[in-house]
Amino acid sequence: MKVVADLHIHSRFSRACSTRITPSALAASALEKGINLISTGDFLHNQWLTEIKQNLEPDKDTGLLKIKRSDNGVRFMLGTEVATFFWEKGKSKRVHTCIMIKNMENISQLREVLSKSGSLDIDGRPILSMSAAELVEKVISVERDAFIFPAHLWTPYFGALGETTGFDSIKEAYEDMEKYIYAYESGLSSDPKMNWMVSQLDKYALISNSDAHSLEKLGREANVFNVSKIEYNEIFKAIKDKDKAKFIRTIEFYPEEGKYHYDGHRQCNFSLKPGKSSDRICPVCKKPLVIGVMHRVMELADREEGYIPSGAIPYIHQIPLREIISFMINKGVGTQAVENKYKELINAFGTEFNVLTADPKSISKIDHDIAGAIEKMQKNEVKIDPGYDGVFGKFELL
Ligand SMILES: [Zn+2]
Ligand SMILES: [Zn+2]
Image (cartoon, rainbow, N blue to C red; front, side, top):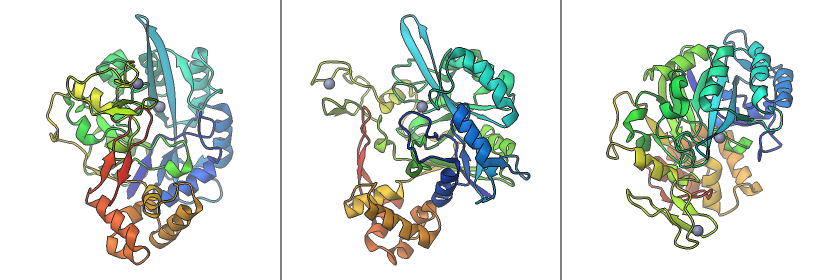
């Protein structure tokens, strides 16, 4: 069966997240997107965990979780993101790591172990005072089957290989616990093509998730599997083995659209395409620039662009449908006009992913202009003004 999985999302208890995120709203929005496997997000957080337990129950067939009573086919996996920090030689090392676990019974023990290093209940994404390696060690000591991966690997502030974190390899970030890491999340500002330039990453599987802070942003990146059963071990074995028969592709945001693609300064309205020896100082304010994902990838790259490692999982780029509609009708992405058109297309095609991959001729029967825009996207004829320092990139489909 085809499984479309988004393994990194947040609940409304994480900072800056939509208050509309509830377990049943997640299930409904996932279905609308075309996602049938989703992380619960934030399972270490007391209040969210209570909601998970109230609203979800184990599915006998898969061991995963489903919505009680009104099961719509969407399955949940227990997942969370944890921020760790420690000081080394006067520099703070802050890393975000995602953790998926199989057994709900282990959460109380995990909470007990981790709460010694910081509060789990202030933020859905807890901030713990320890190294990333210590986090992995503690999680594995409680849940041997945990699937652990660095979140948004390259982002400047919290990516394991990001600029301010300063690690130059996953091994450096996770020390001897790296042996438990077999995948990494590429993040919105990088795509497989960029990561393939860095040979040290070949040994890991690249996965892509939305890191959504609202229902609308679910699935802006995702992973597509073809497995006999939607099951914890089956999914993670497909990832671990980079089994091309089972791990079919990743769905990617255009990396230029990501908000840390280029170097730049938001305040100074300045961005820069990084080169090998590019300037790190802002010409406007003379302070150090926020070094983006592309810059860091180039620093660690030991291959030319275009190199495809053997065993690489294919990918496609997509722009979220609401963004395409917003661009075409020239109305804000959160407006009713965009929502109405979105619903019209979902009603016709079933899911957002169906719309984005549909034959433009069939979309044309509903909306000629949007069909044209989607056709452009399918042909990768997208012009993007790249993002930097927290500013999302802007695309054009003309
Ligand atoms: Zn994060
Ligand atoms: Zn500046």
